Amino acid sequence: MKILVIHGPNLNLLGVREPEVYGKMTLADINAALGSLGQQLGCTLEYFQSNSEGAIVDAIQSSLNSINGILINPAAYTHTSVAIRDALAAVALPVVEVHLSNIHKREEFRAKSHVAPVALGQISGFGPESYLLGLRALATHLGSKS
Ligand code: DQA
Image (cartoon, rainbow, N blue to C red; front, side):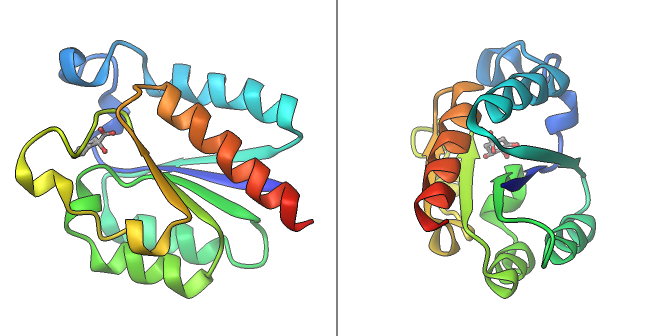
């Protein structure tokens, strides 16, 4: 099983960015934790981070035919990007949406996700554990389909 992990804008600054909201782990720490869980679950992971909406759309499009599922934290684009949602719908791969913070407990504009309607589900509010829970959910889903 090949899973593409996509991190949206500003997540490259994890560790220094508002640690009271997003914690102290860096993106490299999170990817390393995902990598070891992926090994246990029998998944190969590819990682992609970009601050650009178009680059994320390109990464989603290029996953067609080579990737089995997508784990995505679209970050701020969650709340704004019809283009990312449409790309996910176009490739029609199983998608799990994750967030470090609980987007339903913060400013009102964060409660809206354009990605959620094209995702299997959304995990939000557990810090880096959201990614690990998301990977488990995606791997279980993919395993049940194979
Ligand atoms: C986030 C929540 C978003 O609202 C925010 O714009 C982010 C990170 C999270 O992981 O909690 O950049 O996706």
